[in-house]
Length: 186
Image (cartoon, rainbow, N blue to C red):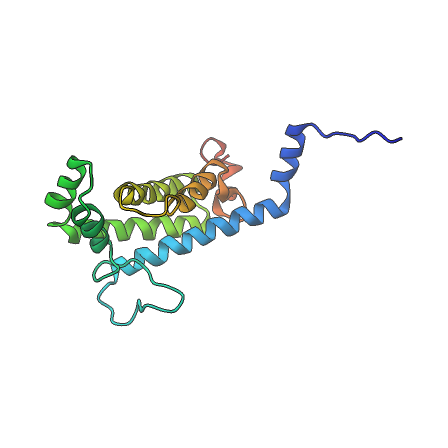
């Protein structure tokens, strides 16, 4: 009769995190979200380029103007659907939508910046937290409008994991800075 040896839980977790496959998975997830945010950000910064952002059988990106734009999301989800949080609805209706040009430029610039930071794995926790905050805002804007309840959590939850695990330490620039600046990148 053999007795199974058990590995202490913390040692098993450490081995999993130190596995090359874990690092590759974290890098792939980080880069995927980076491409997602970069693509949507550029679509908002360059909305006027004809046929640059066509609808395809695979889907579309959220750009600045048109039926599938950041503006149309806010108009429909917050104003038309009568968002139940009155101060938020008033802010969108009276401040954001009348001044949408600067707002959409800021959103596009932030999405583009976050996308680049995630792709290269630099300041990953900060970039992932900003990205998660942007997605959480979308969830708040659409929460009472008969959406699939997990529609946005499938984005913000992995982003929070990328921040918590400091995913830039795997195949990213954060790994290069961790040795000399452990306080910020370690």
